[in-house]
Amino acid sequence: MTTSDVSETAALLEDSEQGWLIIAGWQVRLIQLLSVPGILMAYYLWLFHDGKVFPTCAAGGLFDCGQVSGPGAQFSSIGGVPVAFIGLLGNIAIFLLIWLKDWLPALDDAMPELLFGVTVLGFAFTVFLTALEAIVLGAFCQFCLVSAAIMTIMFVLSLLYLRSSRRTFSAND
Image (cartoon, rainbow, N blue to C red; front, side):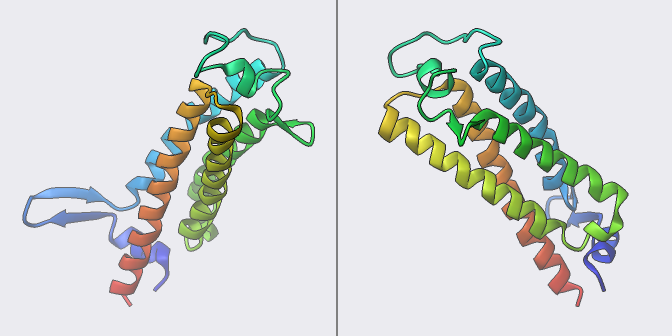
């Protein structure tokens, strides 16, 4: 029995004690939903990095967007590629991966691992950048922190999805 067969047969699970209906794979749809504000946030930060929009946060102090992700910021680019653009591509990849799952049934079996792998990369990148903000720069960009929170939630949800898909699959073997 494949994971997609299990997913279809276990689309709705009922908790007999509480009488709740639990939709299998709800984490995937929530991750896709969260990728939309992630895309918008990364796009805004990319425009800010390119000097096309002005920051809405004050310069100086603990929250200084210009020092963290502005056009002249020391760590706002990796090899000439803006960090915000990398984040934009990552969020778009997450959204499209989930969208493609609906159109390419071949992705069903590998989706838990693929989604977990992509979000692990995004989460690791986020932890690295947030550590740079805290340890090296001593300043934070509140938009970057919101983006980091979104990626952290997506990572946790993908871990829950991976665990639930393995539990469902092994229970039906």
